[in-house]
Length: 453
Image 1 (cartoon, rainbow, N blue to C red):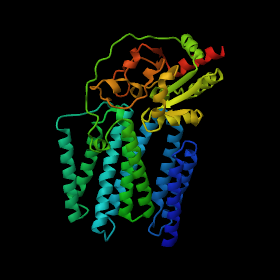
Image 2: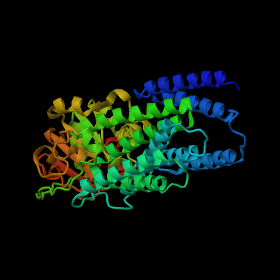
Image 3: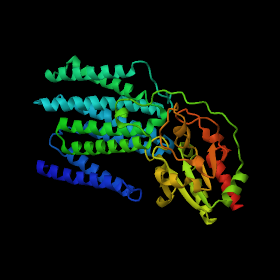
C-alpha cells in the first residue's frame, strides 16, 4: 500500500475515533459510539499490518490469537463487580505496551534527538502507568490494603525519584546507546515512581486514579506514536489522554479534590475520622413494604454493594412496581459511586433502567428533602454526612448525595462494616434511617414479593 493510501485510511479511522467518542457522551448513543471506535481501530490495525515495514507476521499472528482468546474469556467470565480491576489491568497493559514499543524503537537507525526524547517519554509514562495500575488493581481487588499508605518525607522521596528520572533521561539522550546503564535506570525508576504515585491514595479516591491512569496510558501511546512515526497512534493516544484528563478533572470536582494534588500524589493523606456511635434502627421487609407502598416519591441510590449482590435487575423491577403504585421513581447517581467512573450507570443500563430516570447528584440534592423514601443500596462514602460535617474525616469536603435529608432512608447492607475508604458513617444512626440488613438482592426480592402478594 502507498503511503498516501495508508494516511488516507488513517484519517478515516481518526474521524471514527472522534465521532465515536462524541457518541459516548450520551448513554443513549454510547453503544453505537463504541462500535464506531472499534471499527476505526480495526481499520487502523489492518492498514498498519499492510505496511511494507512489516516483513514477518509469525509473532504478530501468535499475539493476535492469544489476545483474542484472553479478551473473549475476560468478556465472558469477568463479573461486573470485577470491572474496575479489569479496567486497571487494561490501563497497565496499555502502559507496558508503550514501554516495549519505545524500547523497540531504539533499534531503529537514524533516531533524532526528538525521537529519543519521545522514546524516553513512552518508556517513562508507560512504566509508571504499568506499575501504578498494578497497585490500583491490588487495592481494588483487596489483594493489598485499600487504605492510603503514607510515610514521613514521602513527597521528598517522590521528588528525588522525579529528579533522578530527569537526570538519567538527559544523560541517556546525550549518548543514546542500547547498553547504557542510564536507559535501564529510567525503566526501573519509572516503575518505582508508578508505585510511589499510587500507594498514598486511599480507596475512596480509586475512581479518580482509574481515570488518571487511563489518561496516562493514552499519553504513553501518543509518545510511542511519535517514537515510531505512526500518525494514527499519535491521534488515538492524544484522544485517550485528553479524554482521560477531562474525566479526571470532572471526577476531582465531584470529590472536591485538586487535579494538581492528584498529579503529584498530594491527596489520600491519612486522617482519623471521629468515631461514630449511636442506636441502629433495623427494619424487616414487611415494614419496608408498608412504607414504600405509601410513598409518593422514591429515590434509589446505588453503590458498589449493588454490584456485589447483582441486585440491579430486582431494583428495576421494584422501581416498576412502585411506579405502577403511583410513586415517582428516580435513581440518584454519584459520579464516583462504585469503583470506577460510570460504574452504576453501566449496571443500571444492563438492567434496562430508563435513562431519563437517572438523576445526577447536583440535580437530586436540591429536592432530596421532598423525597419520601431514599433507598441506599450498598453505597457508603457517597452518602456519608461526615464528608460535610467532620473535618477530620479523610473524605471531608467531598460532595455527597444528601440522603439524610430525605423523609425516610432505607440503608441496605449486609452488616455495619464501613465502606471501601474505611470511614464510619453517621447516616446509619440517623433518626430517619432504617437499616435493612442482608443480601440486597434477597431483601429487595422479598419486598417485591410483598407487593405481588
